Image 1 (cartoon, chains in turn green, purple):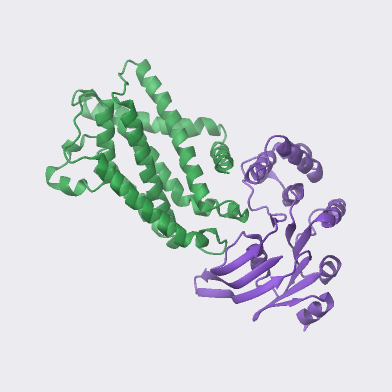
Image 2 (cartoon, chains in turn red, brown; image 1 turned 135 degrees about the vertical axis):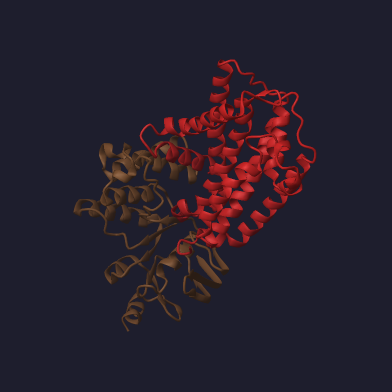
Length: 251
Length: 217
């Protein structure tokens, strides 16, 4: 079932435009390339001894993955509503299918970019690949939980979508995507450290670069706890609200 | 056999909650073709969706031991940018038909819908008639104990209607229907039991003519 939904979702994504498959891959690639090139022009070539484009790519790629996952999950109930006419399909299935498609796309794009960067002589090796993959997966779980929560919120209050979209912009900066977290204002750090994404990107950098030292106070345990809480909350509310999501005449 | 126990169903509208059924309990005996009649907005389609499991009651239980189709001719579930063939494959996968049986169903739908090479075009380019042909063919490709039909006995041109009628006749040898219709002719022809859906609930009539009389009253 999930497999069927994944295929359908991927087909729908690729079929949106002419050369759909091409654009689905090239669009985020351009996004990532532009960001890393522009910021490296502003900031100079290296940061804490790491080549800047690589530094940015390593964090921006997962950031975009998480953001897209969350936003697409938020739209999922409305876009997939007609599917619930087939009683086997539950909203949770469509959520999971969406996350899988999103993750596969992001992985493909990232792989292509890494290959491209390596071609031009950047050092793209990952120091601790297993931990890195685990952190990425943890982030994806967090995104799933958050996305489901927001989908439920957006379903109950359709007007909230715009605000949620806007909130992602400051998140860009608050999560230390472009700069090491230690460059953030120190007086604000205790508050900024409530943001699990900040922890995630610091962890990711620490795992990719051999000599990068994550900000003190960053811990995987915190992210795991937040993720578990959110996941629990999301699934609990989902359980209570699932009938509303399915029903064609609500919202 | 369907059993409804204390079923309540409401919809949340901008003006508050609207109750369609309140604390409804009834039993429909096995092996009957079921007709649902009632005024527009009385809750016929909702009841049909509840019976089929496509919608879920607020409280209460709907129990059945039969396999039930999705609403026959459901076109809303199609993904517009995917081809007809891919949409059919999708439903096959959801209903667990893979490999040989998926090929069989695809062939059946292709032949039944008679839309030729259009089957490989995206659904959004179809005319509404072609869409309903595909949807009807898709429903007929699967074997269910009960088919849910919501006033779609009349899709397409004369030739296609005749074909639908024939396939249906054949299906009715083994399967049963839940039919929502305003055409008393269809109800009389196909159904063995009618459920009159009205604002105070549902009355079951084992005698068709009696039910139709109540509807007209």
